[in-house]
Length: 60
Image (tube, rainbow, N blue to C red; front, side):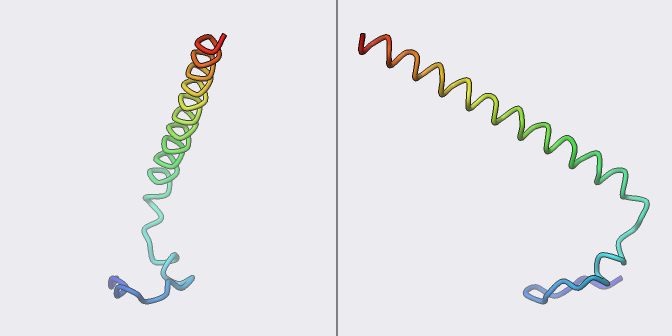
């Protein structure tokens, strides 16, 4: 399997060349990535509400 050159377009056949044995590995890593992004999003929301609540208490 040859590496595509930088700047060359990716074709459908490039996806067919990858090893199928890595599919469970990639799928699991993607699940971890999505879960981490969800956690990060929830943390940002909690921090936003914390600062908003602190601001409203200071203004009162």
